[in-house]
Image 1: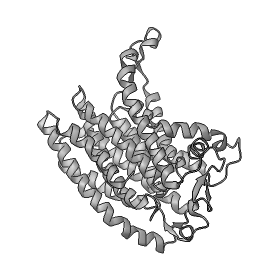
Image 2 (image 1 turned 90 degrees about the horizontal axis):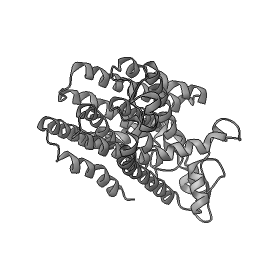
Image 3 (image 1 turned 30 degrees about the vertical axis):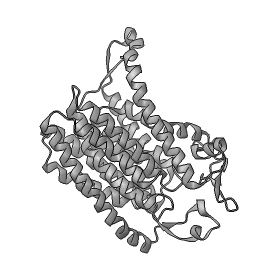
Image 4 (image 1 turned 60 degrees about the vertical axis):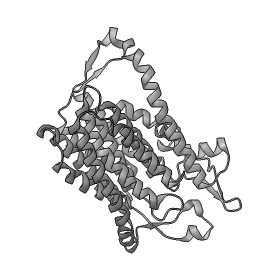
Length: 374
């Protein structure tokens, strides 16, 4: 997949649905958000090389394990460049509030979401620098989500699927259990991107595909009964797409920078905030099908039932120039076992196509299943 193609799939949904928005005030705000996101893209392109120099001087560098034994494998690559995209994202979403026409109560939740994203970015950068143990990595996202969970004043009632309505009724009030669910959601989203990684462009690439699917879903709902909550989601996801696309320019094969845990946590928390504010957590969970499969497949190693090395990336065959399965329990290695050895770029493209296919399947499945479940 060329970088130009990724730009196309990021912009086309906005043009398709944005130009058909009937409400002029909503259309105006979406256009403002798109323009600020456009600026965010170029700002990130300029900022990454600057931050790259500082991380290099600070010794925040790593070597590409998938090029081990080649000249490229000996070159130190700056890490933690997710901090550049996260910084631009936060500045743009804060500045955009000048153009937002939303109630003060809703603005409180919006700012609480930004606070959680900022907190998670800081924790991610701390992880890159301090290399925190996994027991802390599990707890930190839940702590970072506290500002949003405390400020959340939306509904905690869910619709019950038709097969269970005779037992539970049409709706079910979860109360505090719903907030616990939201806290667990932030932990999962933050960690599932972090463990589904290991090749150039995969972390930013999967996030870009999911973000585009979220954008399409929210654009479709602007014509529904509750457009406001989906509008908040668009205001977050558009600049996220922009900064991710710019970061991917440097992180795609062959990577000039590594995104680090900073980006994984930043992206995961952004998706969690969007899911909570737009009340579309179930939909976004289905967009994460490859990440869920990777987590389930990795469970024996993650929980210590099977030996788990520090790096579970595929093995680079210097003779063939292709990646081969390292027999570790990840979706990357499983793909190589099923499809055979392939280049790093080809593996990344294959996994991103799988991600896009799962998102498309989710849209098709929702259209038909909603007729029977609700």
